[in-house]
Length: 93
Image 1 (cartoon, helix red, strand yellow):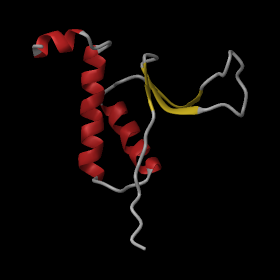
Image 2 (cartoon, helix red, strand yellow):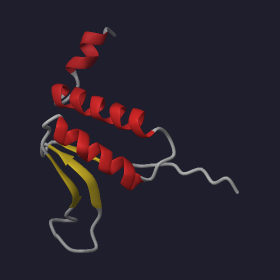
Image 3 (spheres, rainbow, N blue to C red):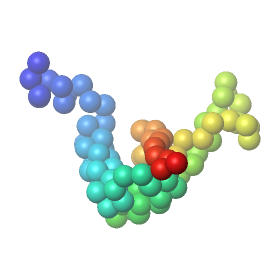
Image 4 (cartoon, rainbow, N blue to C red):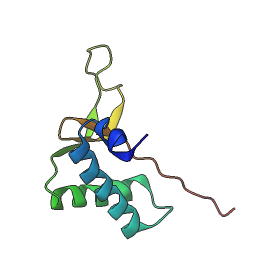
């Protein structure tokens, strides 16, 4: 399969491309083994700089019910993409 065919299958290709750039930049600035909060803060800064619309820590409704015991997503990007950050901390013990 050619690369052009693969790219045509990406939903929101331009937005996804910009978002990938933001995520790579966050990784390059912070490096490895930071906390999710640190990654979230730098991603938020980079999203603002890139003028990408986002909302942070949005509650996801469950079965149409919006309550306090529901899951949260770290970012919604332009009301199209959900971004949930995961970080791996290595213990030296």
